[in-house]
Length: 416
Ligand code: GTP
Ligand code: MG
Image 1: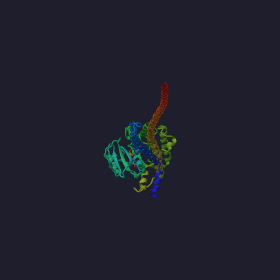
Image 2: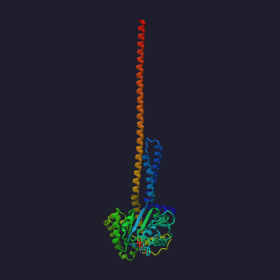
Image 3: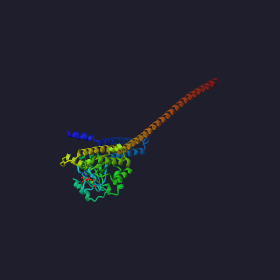
Image 4: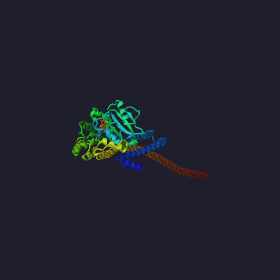
């Protein structure tokens, strides 16, 4: 029934590439950990026979236990990270909310994002947030509360607030996608600091542009800086507020073509981060506001509002963006994150084998030495035996001679 349908849907998600790879690589490290622990145990056993293993080798092997443990720890925290940038009011927070299928982040008038907001899956069923430099969990029930908490704190635009949202409310969170919302790129001189702090480990960047205007210099500059620090960052361009185009249907195609061309040129010719063909899969015309409204209505959270002309097409395009995004982020995260782990895993397995090989060789040598020793001893005994035989023969002969001599002398004496 319902349950199976949901499962089938989730298992088809491209995010499963990451989820499955993470599970597989974790299973492999569980095996490596077992293997290392067995080796340590074995070495402790044979350490008693001092001749074969020295304590240095035992120590080296024990260090692998910590190394493997460290890797498993990092692995458990590995996630896929997407960061949203763009001019203020373009709809960054709205896009994230639409993807989360709920009003999680404050947006709109009076709710300008004034610091970095990171939304990630909560380990509990209750949402809460953590301010930078603190460990305190502040419970949040609603966007209102979240917005209030953010205003009250007098946050600096470089600061990070982590929002933990229940995993069961969104598949993306369940599958380890982490969202980063930012203040407008036009409101800060600290772009370099932003990049160092928030961009270096992002798998995907989304530029939320305004379809009612063209790409701005500030937006372009920011991504020029990003692509100078990262080699070929994955960048999506969302032309948001595309619903506004419905008011002027006669210009629709022309405007779209113009935006599309400029965006492709920006990615392909200016930033040189992808090919022409790839760029076509990275640029979308959407309405975050409509997509969120549609999703809230689907869940019965609001009554559906009258739809603007062309809504269905824009909504399909939003879903198309999500699918391409999921494919891109899961592949990219698997490559950048798990490649390192599997290299290290291979290295550890090799080093461990080298240690075991050297112990085996030492043992073999010892055995050979003992064999040689025994053979020498054997030869010596043989030699002695021979000597003894010779001596005995000699003695026999001597005695024989002596007896003959004595006999001769005796008979001689008798004759005289
Ligand atoms: P800052 O945090 O201030 O930088 O803005 P932001 O980029 O996060 O924009 P936000 O999501 O707060 O949206 C700004 C306003 O635009 C809100 O009132 C949204 O409802 C509205 N908005 C967002 N997306 C759309 C859209 O696709 N169409 C229309 N018509 N309005 C939108
Ligand atoms: Mg915002």
